[in-house]
Image: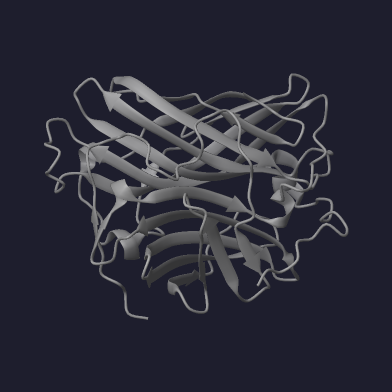
Length: 334
């Protein structure tokens, strides 16, 4: 399919856009996908209550096969969706990871921007409803995971999403030097089940990098802006309480950099533990979202916005886990 040429318009304002993950310290995971082993349907509920959806048969403008996934025994695809309708435009990306021997065992991590009342070629990200999405049967909000009451577990995996950087001294109407890139990095989480808390960091293990691994068809050519790259930033996720339903969320994220003075950082992060256990009896993975806006002493501003997947150390080692809860699968939806 021929790539769609899109001009995304950005602004200096770093206030939260409608549709961002909730800033209060509570949230509800929602079902956002259907997958039958061949077709993926991706859908969200917008602020006005309507449902917007895309699917791989009709709305995929790019499919990258053979994508690396950290999930043992899984295969993966990276899919970019683009859909124009009378009410507006849907632009989304999903990393789909699934067990080819059992498609019901799948995970989806994605990013969605709904441009209500807007149509290409000019779309304003500032005025869009943005959502960071995670979904899969083992993260079903109707299944309460068996979280231990003692011991600890570490989770390592991948994090990524969109990164925006506005150099110091740039006027609001000048978007030529605004960096909008995809960021990727390693997430490290530590769960203390006795205390009932989880905390972590993105970028403390390895480096954050900016590269157009998934969003190139949306963002266009890579931007040559070395001062705006995400290298060496560390996104520290403050300790969050693990709720009885296995969810966790916190309105505190601290951004650090060894050479740049970050004077202000405000953010949120959250997620859920899997309903499947590893060989040690701990949840085999934790998945969620994070976002942080920041300002630097030199006047530069920026934002990280995305999702993450962390696997328990034992599951990463041997790939052994409990099956999906029997009889708790989700029926297909018309």
